[in-house]
Length: 168
Image (cartoon, rainbow, N blue to C red; front, side):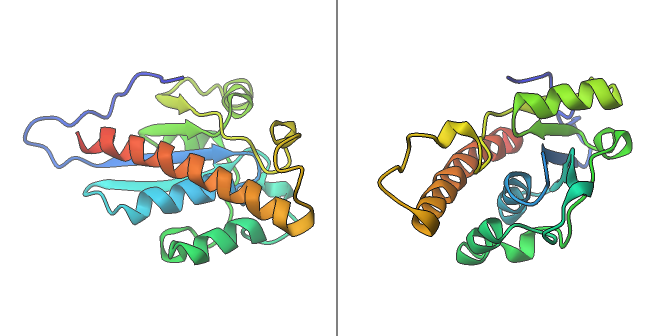
């Protein structure tokens, strides 16, 4: 789902776009998307991220699954060093908010009255039922790695599409 875009460049102006990614915990999907977009180093574009339940995180600043992917793809320098709790102020500071799933968008509308420019993607979290029946031949870490690689591939394709549109 795409919402309207108010951040189109004004002729003769310095174009700056703040894209903000939102997921649940801000330790996996939104952090990967943030790093992927920042790594593109698009002039005038910066990405940040947050999670609607980030303050409940007990496992550190980023999940081990995300950290493995970030390291393997050279993206660690492009991510924020810690998680951020989504808030009305965080959402208001962005030109475009990208929600990793419809439930995050709904939560922000209900809790923060968010009605700003947004896109809603459908990127399942690693533990979601979406993955049931997939990679059943794998067990343990091998299954987890396969799910994480698939999630990363989804995010990379979505971020590349967004980057193309931001560059247009």
